[in-house]
Image 1 (tube, rainbow, N blue to C red):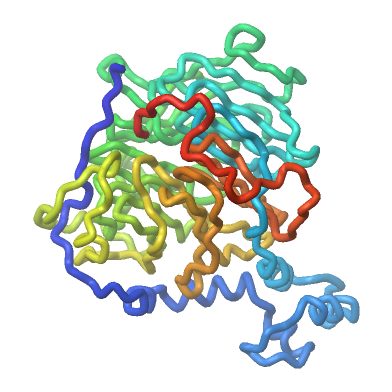
Image 2 (cartoon, rainbow, N blue to C red):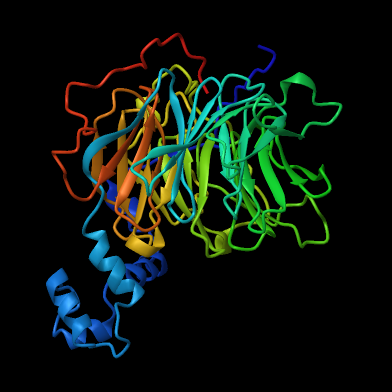
Length: 473
């Protein structure tokens, strides 16, 4: 294999030891974040007043429904916060039920923006798209082209017509998923158009870790092991911007909001950076956020242009506000420990180290980030008001954290191996997790023992059927 991942030993700073108690760290969760989260996920004052409920008193779903029927708010329906409050009490923690069982590790599970489709990506050369509205039947079965090891990321165009998939190679492929063909074999039954991201100097070693469509669907942005962010104009069929963004692999890149001007990136150099394409000096960051002690594995934006979260090999998720970013990186001395997340456990002495210049609003601990680029997300705004953060974990669980309190509210246990990705349906209380055990499974808010796809305890396995040794990514 010509591609080799660069080894980077994380944080470039001297850490301070912090207390193992979550209390001190989570007190910095920032009152504004907590307040905004509660505004979007708890009944408003008018609702509480109309139902004669105190500020901290629980309001039953029955009371909320009665208030809606009597038009207490004068709008004839639930407010979005009332809706989120009612729905967030029904978390997707029952099950799981089998969506698919493959003979290779499941790396990716992602719902489309409207929740009608679920995309699963597997090691080797397989992507499957499931119709969530038709009992998870296969909408498209894709055999990919020229993959290097695995599908590293996928992105669905805003109109849900085109799927872009990347690998540990310099080419992103695009395939039409709405052409009526169920089977799609690359360049045999259907053309998979290749978009070249490397230049002449990059050579065979160029590997893409993260790919995203712009909100208008005209551009693709990728993060790669060439320490750069590349932006591809689909109409002109070429890379239009190449930003040397970090000093190590860029594992994550995403757009800040509905516009396509502001980008967030995360790297193995332990830094999160903010980029504004409207600035006069293209390729110059507008800010940096310091606080992680090791490589960033994923970034998810809250979609408001202010807040985002990052998952990290230092075994934490951090919540950030870009209004607190700095223009320069603080000079620090080298870290006091060495390890490699691909085959070592995290050093126990480093678990509660704290960056002396931590700019994050809060830190979430409990899950495990080992062996692969594990992903984290905000829960959906429609059904939860983004009240939660959820993440896969190398300890075979899905963790759900409360943004307002920092506490773990649920741990979903069933898988027999690492959970690299998971996805919460944008409107319904359904969560899908993908694991290296080969299973794609769904979790629901209600239980249905009569569903034959329900998976029982004792059916877990550490590896898919026909498993062979896996290179770590």
